Length: 203
Image (cartoon, rainbow, N blue to C red; front, side):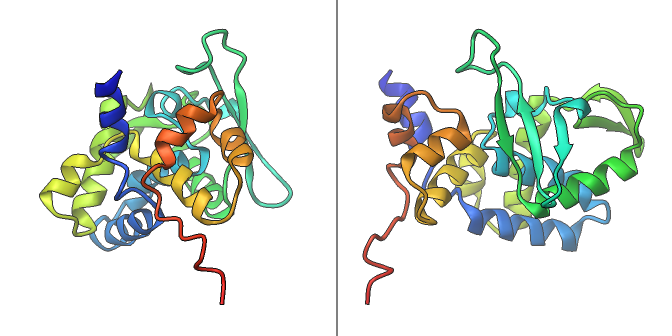
């Protein structure tokens, strides 16, 4: 159990919106087809998903909303053995990226995030290993050092988003709802290293 705690917290200091923004901009400058690289990063961050949850999303699981965000059904996950699922929502930027991705990918592919072979989308889900690789490549492209790049993983999106929500002023109930946590003790482990200055908003 102690080993698992180190695995989560040891990587959490560098994972947040500053990383996401740096990685996104680096990919835009270095990758002509950056939409293919950015889609899992932005999407996983917004939904606070594990990479195993991200890769099983189906096109039918998403719904574009009138406020330009998206409603998403997250299917069975590690914390949901009965397969009840949970509902999550995306930002407008993420919804725009997904809309552009779907326009390029076409309507006849079931997995939301499919593989790409010789520049063409294929009707096969993106693998969890590929998601991890995309995240590490984004960190490297953003100028992070080797040790930081090594620390990034498929879990970085979930950890960073949880910490950013806390720093943005959301309470633990809202964060638990957004990320599907059932235990405040587990969420506490994700938030321990968040740079949350409660005095920063005071004069």
